[in-house]
Every structure is written in structure tokens, then in C-alpha cells.
Amino acid sequence: MALLEVHDLHTSYGTIKALRGLSFNVEQGQVVSLIGANGAGKSTTLNTISGLLKPRSGRIHFDGRDITGWRADRVTGLGLVQVPEGRQVIATMSVLENLMLGAYRRRDREAVEHDLEDIFKRFSRLRERRHQKAGSLSGGEQQMLAVGRAMMARPRLLTLDEPSMGLAPLLVNEVFALIADIKAQGIPILLVEQNARKALQIADYVYVLERGTVSHEGPAADLRQDPTIVSAYLG
Image (tube, rainbow, N blue to C red):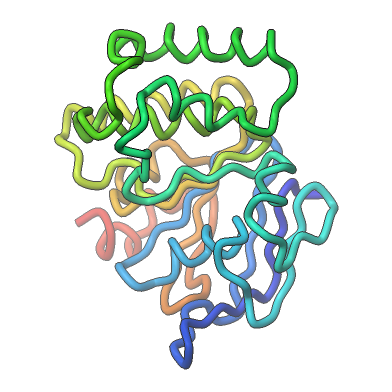
């Protein structure tokens, strides 16, 4: 059984159909990427899975449990944790306070302290700036903070929505090095990413979305050689 199973999902914004019968799976330990043009339904997919949007129809199963239509806090409580597009750190709160928000449901205080120290080891800049307001950080630092906040929740599946958006090329490389590090820990990742070249390099399996449904799918290594994908997304 797949860790995440999405079957025949339909989601709309009023009369606008964003997802039209979308189906895909994420297996344990996999990095699965959703790629596609703007408006293909990638972010809508993550927001529907995470409970931020309610589907019109279809089913979402996580670890064998039907979570279709659940509220976002209940979904997060199962360990399905999203890093949203645009980072969405709380600008007026400190770096440390933002990180601790990720652990707000946890009661294992010693383990929380251990995980916080682990985040600071991985992101030395966050340690240096832990008492600064999150809004004063650079875009790259805010992305590190958003990922660190999600990791504080001890995710069983991490969903990342456009983590490289708006970042300079050197910072993009840094973000994808971080994703590779999380992958090495065995944490499954569902990645939405406009940078198709980077997504195809790090993913195990890729679904290409067009108009709210899957047009192509396969192992990333295969799609990197597919002339249709190369022409449309790798130029």
C-alpha cells in the first residue's frame, strides 16, 4: 500500500475546475515530483491534500486512512506537513518562535529540544539569527526557516510547494541540497517545483500535470530522456 494515494480528485474554485480526475501515489521513502506549467493544478493539489481546500469529489488516503475533506490541523496531526508556496513565515515573530510553532502539537519536550538543536546544526544562519524577526531574513533564509519549521513537526510525508521560487541560483542549489539531505533521512517528499530540471534530478518518480490531470508519468530517469518532456520543460 502506498503511503499517499490520491484517486480521481476534483477541486474547483467556484466554477473554475482546477483538478479534473487527478490520481497518483507516493511510496515510502520516495521523492515524487509534480511538474507542469503555471495553472496546471500543482499547488491546488498540495492544498487539497493538506486540507486547505476541499475537493468536490475523489478520495485521498494517507497511510491507509481516508482523509478526504479533513481540516488542515487534523491532516498535520497525522504527520502530513506542508511547506507552503512563498514560505509564509510569520514575519513579526522571531526565528526561534517560528521554529517552535512547528512543534506546537508535540509533548515530547526533550525530543523537541533535540530536534531544534539538529535544525540549528543544519542551518547555522538560523542559529545566528534565532532572536531576529523572521521578516528581516533574506528569501533564502526564510525558505530554510520554513523547511526547519516543518521538520520540527517530525513529518511522515513532507510536501514542498515551489521551494526555489524567487531565489538566486546559488540559493536554489542550497535548497535542493537540503531536499537531498531530507531524502537521505528516508522522509518521503511530494515536491511541486517550477524548475523542472532540478525536480527531475532529485525525484524518483514524476507526474506531469496539464489542466488538472496527469498527462505523463514515470521514473524521473526515464522522463529526463523523453523527447516530449525535454522539449516542453527542459528546453
